[in-house]
Amino acid sequence: MTEASGPKRIIIGCDHAAYQLKETLKKAMTAQGIAVTDAGTHSEASMDYPETGRAVAAKVSSGEYERGILICGTGLGMSMVANKYPHVRAALCNDLFSAAMSRRHNNANILVMGGRVIGDVLALEILRTWLETPFEAGRHQRRLDMFDSI
Image (cartoon, rainbow, N blue to C red; front, top):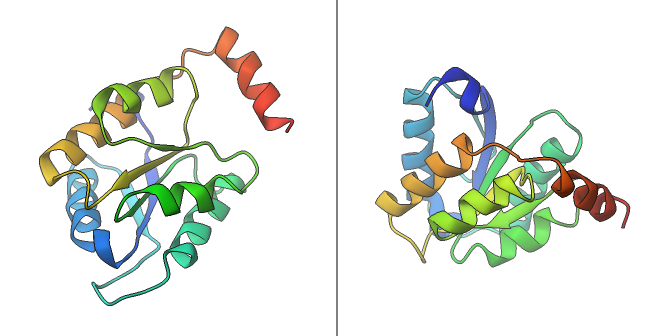
């Protein structure tokens, strides 16, 4: 990943079902020079995913972080929590095409994945694709402006 191709810092969070995957993604991003803030959880002990979802989504919504990552068992719960926040466009991406399109057309600022749905190798490829794919803007920006006015 080149310096111009993605964020310099990112916030990440997960629930207990995705703890190991979060650690794998953190290690990969750190190795690429991305400063990673870990919003939790910090173990595989059962916890309530909305706590972490709120922590990450609030920081992206406020503009403190340009982008975030959320992971839970399926990714469904985290995406539902995150998308309640203004200016958050959380995209559940468990395949490469969705990851690329979420950035190209939707300028997704939170990547959500299902830790029990995909494995580490695919998750790392989804992450790489999502971090490196630029927003195409143009007609898509008009649509995002409409989205943000809801």
